[in-house]
Image 1 (cartoon, rainbow, N blue to C red):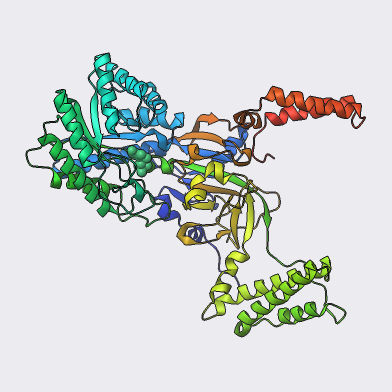
Image 2 (tube, protein in one colour; image 1 turned 90 degrees about the vertical axis):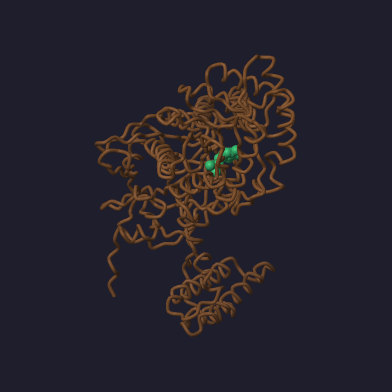
Length: 624
Ligand SMILES: *Cc1c(COP(=O)(O)O)cnc(C)c1O
């Protein structure tokens, strides 16, 4: 029987490239994954292996976060253009203004690119803290772009925002708690600056999905109807109702169902109508974030243009007839940057669950081994389940004897190998079985290889660990060969959660290729541009990875626009309060004691100390 030839189309289907790759990731004839941003004229394809070669030529190693700037620009354009199209087609009377929530990716290359490219759309920034507001004030140059200040604000936060107003920024304070309003009034009076105030409403609309707790009565954020009434009265009393300009709501992130978004928008617009009726100046409606992305395909029942269309039409539907159309603001973070970053890492080693050598078994061998051998030599489709059960039974009996000192290490090893052999045989028979029992179905996972890979889940993919987020993962080369192994990926941390064992489509293993000797085998994890970088932690002191931003040009060449060296060992040690000087000095003393005890010669001491200092300056990940 000859094997059907494997094609790159088979790989594309297997790894779901069409779904998450949106048509701009594809596989070339050489079996390499390539990217072709649609906003580059001629849409040239760039193989990721070429980019990695460029990274290595410049002296950097994997793991690396690869940022494709063109894809940031693409999403900023798509968001603005889609809203503009919906506004145009529905005859809405006011424009859209986007703001990027800095918390979603605070890296300066990202924020600067959004500010630079977004200027043509007056795309602004959302800040949830003083630090983020300072980023916004220093980065935005276009005075037409908005700055939205969310989060709890102290006097200093408010003063910074008032300074932004003085400098000509369209800066809004979104009031999260009643106490904040007094502080804003007080500081504004003191500084003689007119603030723009928004209220964050706590909607009763509840949404599905992971972040459903951001919505509803018990949500942590936002003002109740009573608090809003009370604050209107306070503004009225001081004759500052014309400072109230904006209504804000945020239902949560990654909202799967467009009907929830519609319901939320309608409820918010009712609030908006009422605020206008009460005499507030208003003019701005801020829809928050929540626009979802499809990591696997099919998580949402809407796309970007439906989102924009449904939001604008819901506003029109709920707005009172005599109320002027407010400027629409959205704070889409995830949808703006998720696609632009890729985590790339190499594979270090593999564990396979395959039998070791099995000796010829004769009647000199332990009786249990003889029985297990019988099972092993008689596996058939019709008795697959029974063979499996028997193999496990005899294997466990031998393990038990071993625990009591009544079986040797070699006997145990032989038993383990024979049991694995039975499991492998049963697994290979599964396709011939009419009905596969659950226990046998799980053999795919139980026998899957473990690919040890050069990254830390905790540092680079925290949502994988914290909330079982599934990111698209696949090898980025050899895609013209059939992947004939199944694997899970384990990271460098020695933590049982440091792994990827859930893949697109709910699969618990990933099809992979057998490693070719010393050749690098590189995986890409895609759509990691949102939330992953700064939520990451220093588990086992694996630090930030190298980060490279590229811009793809029309001729298919690419520029390394930014290169950031990842943390060195010295860097991560300083985060936990070790200074290189202290470490070197203490290590020097250890080495000197060894010289005195004649364990090493002085010349060796010098060599050892040099090596120690070099390691301090090295990468925290596995280096070649
Ligand atoms: C987190 C957050 C966002 C971003 O949400 P996405 O789902 O990433 O678009 C927007 N606004 C507020 C207030 C947030 O807390």
